Amino acid sequence: MTYQERFLSLRLETRKLRQDCATYFRAWESQKKKAERLEKENQKLKKEIADLKKKLGETEKQLDHEVEVKEKYRGMLFKTNQKERTPETNKEKRKLGGQTGHKGAARKKPERIDRKKEVYLSHCPDCQKKLKQASSFYERTVEDIVLSLNTIITKYQIQRQWCSHCQKEVHAVPKETIPHSPFGLNIMMWILIQKYRLRLPLKLVAASLKIQYGLNISEGAIQNILHSLKIRLGPKYEELIKEIRQNHIKHADETGWRINGQSAWCWMFSSPESIIYTIEETRGKGVPQKILGSSPPGVLIRDDYASYKKLDLPQQSCWAHLIRNSRERAEKKDSSKEMTGLNVALKKMYAELANIIQKDLTEEQRGTFYKVYQKKIHKIINANYTAEDVKEIQTRITNQNTNFLTSATGHPNSPEQFSEGLPVRNPFLK
Image (tube, rainbow, N blue to C red):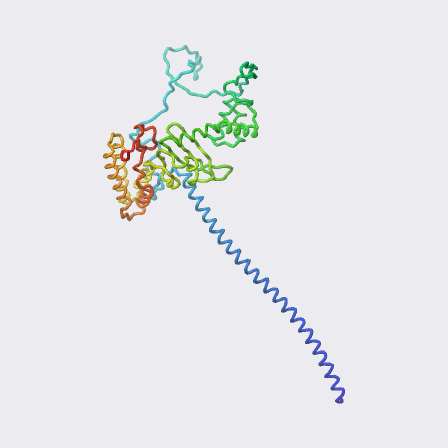
């Protein structure tokens, strides 16, 4: 091969190498851009994963909180009546039924007798021999209800009368009816009882009317009845609220309530003369503040629920709740000696207060007794208990403090005005 041929061959190889190099460079540039794009997408996905993990953690915390609240409410609403069992035999500590020495209690016979019937056999049930009637007998009283599958339909002929003084037509409203309603008050009362006392849905209220009385009322008609009653009874409801606010003695309590499967709360407020209920979504302090108003007079009697604590009026804490909780812990097999001693002290203190409350005391005597029992309450609060069961009761007492020594100042000694063994007159405060 000559020199010139060799030169041309190398020149061709060089050109091919340059072309291959340009091709590879372009492929490298493409792969580089693709890698950069994938890296950006990877960083974006990593950020999304981190955000999702953060949201998942927050959701798990919220779920744990909801479960905790649900279990707390479950404990408030559904308290078991199951007796404590011994771990050795898994049987109840005492037998079922009446205990030895327990005085039996039977249903009292009705004082009113509506009808009498004589019952006798004409033939022996065994041999079918004809029997004569006897002069001796024994009595059996049976109480029953009257079932009726028919409604009572009344057509009223209401006179269209003219008042010459008012110069207009007037007419009477039949008793036990509501104007423009095709249903009587008894039906309306039945619906109210079924809906609010027995807590039946409208579908079952309609079914009960159909089964019991053969009365066909749609769910919509029942809802209209409830709405009309709400409008007509609304002013009376406001009057009851006003009476409770102004009364010197008030009670408050709350319990769980369900509305279409959702949790709510049924609140009760009462005085010796009136009682109202309200269904609310919350168990917060805003409900008693709304019902009782700002700075109402008198004393509020309540349990140890914290929502009542900051209401602007004197409060009497329920002794029955405290002593019952104390007794339950003291009667447990593994209760501490401190718990047993505190339970005895609380029962003794309440017995003394119940005795003092019946006496007519001067202002000076009330002040003296108040200071004595205030020291006893503070002694329990400041005691250095070590057992966990007694610390729970100590915390209850600490939260309520001298509310256990408050009562309705200046009101008569009427035990019916207070519930669950509360004092009936304040022996300490004027």
